[in-house]
Amino acid sequence: MGKYHFFYIFGTDKKMLKKINIILTLMKKRKMFLSINSLLRAGLMMLMFLSFSIFANGHNGIGKMTLGHLQVSTTGLVQTLAVANIQAQSQKSPEADAPQEAATHKAAYDKIDPEFAGIGPGNNTIPFVIALVVFILATIIGRRKKGKVKLAMIVVALLAVGYMSKIMYIEARALGRQQGYAPVQPIWFSHKVHATQNGIDCEYCHVDARTSRHAGIPSLDVCMNCHNQVKEGSVSGKQEIAKIYEHLGYNPQTMQYDKPGKPIEWVKVHNLPDHVYFNHAQHVQAGKVACQECHGPVEKMNRVVEYKELAMGDFCLDCHRKRGIDTSNPYYKHYKFKELKEKQGIDKITVDKIGGADCSSCHY
Image (cartoon, rainbow, N blue to C red):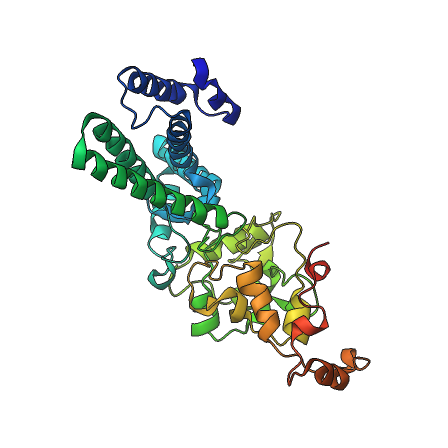
């Protein structure tokens, strides 16, 4: 690898790095750089590496990719590959024709709704690679030409660098955030069918939202309150409801639990960093915050998508600075709100005035 051996620090594919090394060596020998400045060379090499890294690793961002009929965010890449692997194995064995048909059937309804498909920063891999190619071509042409053509190529190269910098900023800003994330779940559950069409309240299933830090995932016993009678769905037929029975060890024919059950490995959609403390009860019960304010119109979703960005400054703190508190809450009986209003010259007590903007309130 010669002097480009520092690429090994990133632990990427050696064959690809050899190709990059060959390209860079040829470009050096033929003096195809716009400038002999070592900083420009290093910048070009790093940009080439970043483009390969972004393309190979799915850029570890929030953008969506399509694999067959599955459209998921790249943060769920491992899960998607696992599903693809299962489907590939089922194609190899004739005995697995039925499961393969079922998976294909599920694809007909397990999709991200069109109105939520464009949420998030999207997949910036292709625009980044195109901008990188434009930069390299402008560098090569600019080195060979003179006069106005050379000046034009310099402008094009600078514009390409600017565009790539913008993409890198967007991707860096998206680290730790999952806006647009919509993983495939082991059992297709449509909030649109349950909450909108059937009018089931959010807290019928998420019973812990008012009393606990976590809203909670309902047990399958809650599902069986309806599905011990409702054995066929209006959209998915019997396929998805049969999975509930399977995980419970329930026999719908005899209406007996005659088999060992097994847990469902649901995929969490809304994830916050480990150092962030968030309490559902504090927001839902005390703050009277509606589910949709943070989760978006989940009642309209067939597949749940992380609708809001859930960023600290643009989302949480902005809300705390605008939302007033219920001063009649007995918890606040020792707070001297009248004196606070007079002291700060304000008409409304917002969350940030009682510690809602303190670092230690959410980070510990």
